[in-house]
Length: 174
View 1: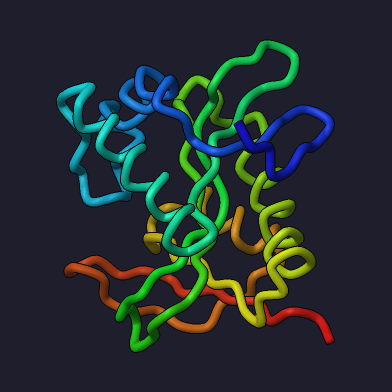
View 2: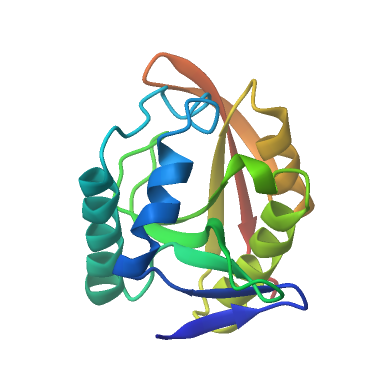
């Protein structure tokens, strides 16, 4: 198991097949998918397939979303981090997207902001990325705030599958 980043409260590590029950609990919750196209998963196998997909991203792209685990409890609380998006999205290709998703019972703990900030730092300091992007449904106020707190700056509003989204980005400091 590879640990990528740690904070005082959280560990961010590679997603593992053993995370499937937590992923299923998270991604089968319609409220979690409210701003994600309203397509919650229905089977544990779908979560297992998603983990396998992310693990392949580690191999192919050197990065993919990371499991977020509470240090105090060892509990899987969700995922966060960067991934390469080949695109196109909003007229862009081959960009690194900052994203996060958490089990509903962990909302309001500041975990999204905490993990977003360290993901940006990892992207710039370790990966030496020139630019990090983020996308949020216009109506998802919490996610828009997280991207802003992580330092990303609003660029424009665009249509994603018929739904208005905000595009944010941040260039690596010189």
